[in-house]
Image 1: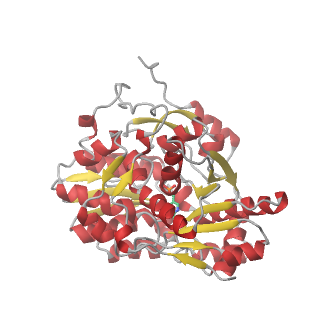
Image 2: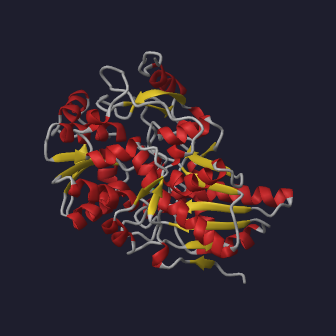
Image 3: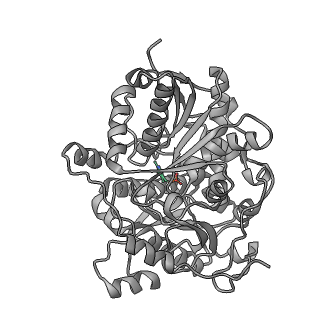
Length: 456
Ligand SMILES: *Cc1c(COP(=O)(O)O)cnc(C)c1O
């Protein structure tokens, strides 16, 4: 019994509903504010950007929201995703802990992102939308939405952060294979992009700038909406299919997690695996430790302020209360592109504030080292983002060894690294370094946080 063990549910056990943690939280998260009036927004304020069905999910407090039939039909192509017991990794670590991982790399785009991309494309199609704009960093979200757009016949336009556009041609090619249009951001197509290019025509771009461009285009075209791949409540909710499946699979294995680990960029894969378990705990179920792992070079949960901030650089988005490094903060160019965002999902931020989760920051070299150890034991090469979760799980397993305790650890292996092999080449060539930001830059970005009136 020294091999990896796989737990797979039958198709019939794909969850019928997404789980909404808003129904179980002891206090609601802070309201979303209008960027101009700084008063709470109503559903109508968000209509230029999103179809009403998704806006209603965003503000819903219903515990369960039914997954539409056509979405479940598409999910069936790769869901339920497998849950593995990492017996060979346990052996390599000589830990008494049991390590389980949920593998989301089996989706067509290679990560958890299609779980929400397919849902968002479905609701946009239902609302008669013909085009969707979005942003992408490393290209995972862009390729997931491009895939979903192809299935529903929606035109997808992706503003891709300039550095990634130049450095990661394969993700771009994948988006184009699915039929999407990919544009380097900052671009000369939008006011937000032109304003940046006027100051610096070689600007490397950032997620905040790419969001501004995509939002601007959606807000100014009637047949076009915008889609976000993380951060928002409805996105986190779509990802809860991961945790719900894991719960049923662990039941097959006769286990329940003591510790859950996930990496956090905007917070969606982490929330996806953790929220169903946190919800069970809030309803009187077993207590567990839930650990969010973020990059030390972009540490919103461990170094950011819990405050109202904009989601983008041009300040077109509503204000949300979240752990943020400031919307003008530009993280250094480390390889886990999906984790280079200045803010954190309001629901994940609120959960940290309530003490329901913990947060830790790791440097990139130690994460790659953990990822390589994982690949050599389990055979799957994790995405650079997922390496953060791997490192977090390994550290907990080693702690179990020191303390002589056998705990059950569950982590989300949110994507494979097949498009990120250059990062591994750099790691093996000793070219990967632990970059850090200037403290002065962080202080300046935090000083620039918008002021909002005290709640009425
Ligand atoms: C996008 C992405 C992330 C970061 O986004 P979250 O919303 O925090 O999950 C992490 N891992 C992978 C593989 C991604 O594609």
